[in-house]
Length: 374
Ligand SMILES: NC(=O)c1ccc[n+]([C@@H]2O[C@H](COP(=O)([O-])OP(=O)(O)OC[C@H]3O[C@@H](n4cnc5c(N)ncnc54)[C@H](O)[C@@H]3O)[C@@H](O)[C@H]2O)c1
Image (cartoon, rainbow, N blue to C red):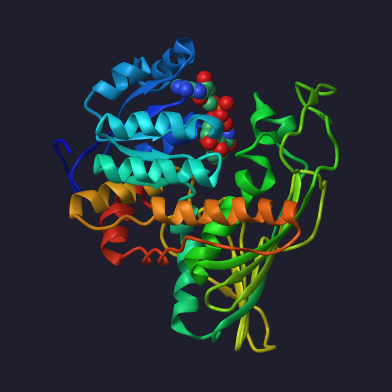
């Protein structure tokens, strides 16, 4: 860790590998945090790194130069198929790794990445970090208050027509390591695990509605994409707490009217907003009373990088960080096991577990929220 920032002490130097579609959201989001300094970007495509570096006033390096440089945390924004290869290089270069989701393209690869971090004595942080946002933290506080009693059941729903019409390289969404479950279900599962704790057992059903699929509109309209992972996946999740949650994820549905996440407790119900956002509206009811609004807590804006900010803050304080490799590995196993359960036609017990990440402490919100005005 390097110099000092006005508000919160140590400044952590951050660099990014991967200058693709999501890069600007990180580069802008990270700027909100005064204790982070984005210093450089690298990409296998040198011209892509140069263009992003110019736009954001940082250095463009080769991946090797970036790994030999002075970054404390390297953020991996490459596609899932190379999360293991790139993540390993980061850890073996002695840097902490913060990687985009999923942790790796398969549970086996995720385990290798965790072992590499343990050997290197470095940390892994992993997206999604949206559960640290104002909506997830407000839901967590309500559940922990006991007002809704024990959560006995729930449902989660992420169904859309897929990213073919907006993403410049949509192929990777239909390959192992992505699909609606690994690419989007990961937000829902991470939110559920922070709220309910680890999953004990899963069942799954999965299919592919169209292969190849035709891009329905947008700049690549009419082109065909091979589908190499299921595009509609239904999971039955049994949590250690005893709660049963059903989750549907799909890239094959135009429209629906289901809530993103609903949780049903002994004493009432809770409706959560899209867990791909940091904020959003929440509602709850006690028994069969009227729905009431629940106000989100701090951090509700476009804050990609909140998990990096919390990780840097926790490293400086010598504490565990919340968007952790352990959480991400457990969620990756839930997804991997759901797809295996679908193939074998029966439930799969999980081998990993994780503690619920602790709620964001008031000290973090006090020091950091005043900088981002969230
Ligand atoms: N695009 C989004 O809206 C979005 C949102 C949230 C999370 N993500 C996640 O972010 C990650 C990247 O997604 P994206 O949409 O930016 O993808 P992208 O295809 O637009 O960009 C990926 C970049 O990684 C580079 N790259 C590939 N292999 C590399 C390697 N071995 N070394 C260095 N660079 C390499 C590519 O050249 C490309 O510039 C994925 O894990 C995705 O799930 C994307």
